[in-house]
Length: 476
Length: 86
Ligand SMILES: [Zn+2]
Image (spheres, chains in turn green, blue):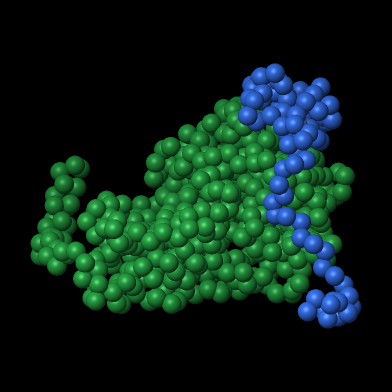
């Protein structure tokens, strides 16, 4: 059954041995971030952590690494925890086919249990805030769903956006927010600021695991994250109307903060250790004023450690980045088989495709770089044959080793757009891009000597099963 | 008290832990926030890493992200002005 809130998912993780309760007292710094950092180094079945006793926060409980491994990502989609990554991406993609699934408005959201208004709002009292990386400019909230509407079309449900943006706590009721220029929220803000109006905003913290996944998915501008959540859950996503802003918010969230992004205001923000594995900062960014905060009794503060990859964010964004790229490519090129864009949110993307005609793989590669997500990512695109699994890096390396001839198979694109957080972009936001064609040339392209490939021997599959059975029995 | 990052005196104590285990301070000039129990490199101006310090000039000169767009002209002005631009 789908999880309607974070608590239900933590219970499920607990049952599967994928949640560690830390009951000893810990300090907000550096214990919380260091433990979360360590959890990210535990490998494909790393657990989530729940800290029950944080010094100075009598009721504060902190959950980290909730999506921080392939096992937990699988459980978020209600798959067995041992499901291979490629299989998880395929299932994500299969469920996307039933998009859109309209959400369900539910009454009496639990976050209405407690409310503070106006100057009584105190983020430092409600949230057990703490620093993540040593040189962060402050305490951040980095796994909340931020919800805004298009001021030019406020009644359009699909244009309402649900996204995760870094939020720097700058006071009892003040956040700095980073709305990247290519993100939907920046479009909403621009529209509001052109009118000289504040942009109403809701920040929902501590959500069911599918809400975090869809908030991390680069969807088309007019597609609703809630309608994708319904498709991924296989049931309508429960939502509620936010009491102050009337925005549609996740029904089960732990804490709901409402207010406005102040019109035409920019303030210094950062730095913040980002998903690129580098600090970013020194820009003046928009500011949120919180006018109302609502929260469940003893709210859970869900947080995400990010730093040197891989960390939780790579698991959260990985499949969520592969699937829309696959969908967009297949819409025009049905020959595309699979996309692995899990590296730093798709700065590197690997695509496998059948060939329609000589040169086809290059056309596919160039299309990757010009998809909506490709505008800000897809700096290195590797195209491989349909027989190569892009999630199996040794196979990809084999294709690069033997199919790729740098003389002709490297297509360089100078001065392309990229997200400014890419530390190699110069100036920030501008980068070269490259397509590496590691496919077998097809006629009339007859370069190379690829006509005599060695295949796995017939019957290998049968023997593989037999040998696995024998070794399993021997190990028992 | 001064801000360990920009040395401004505009620092607020925004939270004291119940029982007094720590205090959180916030600079309203560069918006740096810290807890008094953090290491000296995060709390003491002299020990704050050089490359992460901020001057008033750097704060003012920082680029906007995203840039504040020009105000849209009211609809009637659009209609009048359209001819001038062609
Ligand atoms: Zn300062």
